[in-house]
Image (tube, rainbow, N blue to C red):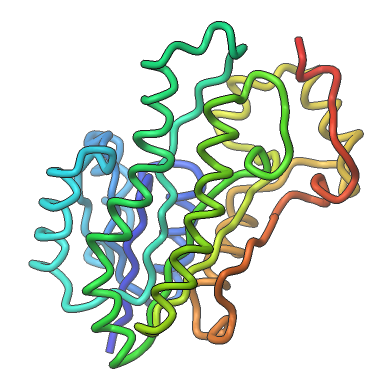
Length: 254
């Protein structure tokens, strides 16, 4: 039996790296992203191992349609990876309700909607094989920082949502865990982190470097796999030790 994963936000960054790892492990992957052009371009490299699904997971009707199309291709799902997210950094005084809702709609609502819609499929798969949910939060959900009122709050909520899922879905055989990446060399980080911020992160992290997308994907795939069969309700901070050593980077306050 070929195992199946569904990865949201799969067209780039951590989602794409996770897709690549799953495919290399012999799994098939439903790649979900709302950026259809990039999604189809990236999916082409994997051939028949993936199915690109162009949907916006912040819209309930699109989530329902996405799950319907998923079921037309796959009979079950071993791993649901809720990775899709948006970042919008700014002071509290400049964060309008529209900006707040835009972040929450994808980062939190999307995780809830996709997980809820996929639960019957995951529960059925768990009886025959195994199934798990891995939600992608952020180190910003664990430690406060300026300019992240919406982003940090959304990711903190994802961590709590993961605990709720573990508590309730465990009786169905579905595990739920969370990965909180620290600074990672993604295109987003390269775009928003100045050289001063990068140097400050390096100085504040025991490993003295940013992580790679593949390193985060490795943590995700472990929690999703049979190797973590007795692990649920856990938060794995893949952050180079950033969370372990305190709070506060002056360069991030500017």
